[in-house]
Image (cartoon, rainbow, N blue to C red; front, top):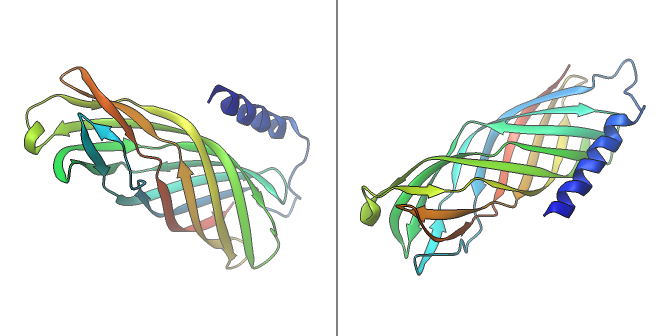
Length: 204
């Protein structure tokens, strides 16, 4: 994890110090507003000896990308909080909210085409909050530790005109947090979701 973080940091610094700039008639900033679904992987680990399942959720998202040149950009993702139900052996046992800010570097293969695919890598920080026990854990103090990990990004931009575009994309994020009940660790929630969605972008 440290090695991947250092590598991505070095990559970001390399682009940050590069002298490449967008042409004068090209808008370097792209603001996207859309909606994404966070869909955790099917096997979320074992908590207190029981199979854990984290359900998906959908919420509005926002991203801002700065294009250093026609192909390369740095992207920052933010969203409204996602809310998830955690099930143990199929029974609802907790709810939690999280925010997953993510920063990454994207490569756009055909930036001048009507349809332009892109891929990217980055880092994700996930903050869990308002975690509460329900059902068999009603009244218990439940917490999920915040997570820091790698992220990957792929998608398609559809150019509408020189300013407007539509984007379909998917992100993978490495998210795992230790779970405690009344201060005692009962396991690790391995979430590692895919976040997929649609957005409208504006260049400025």
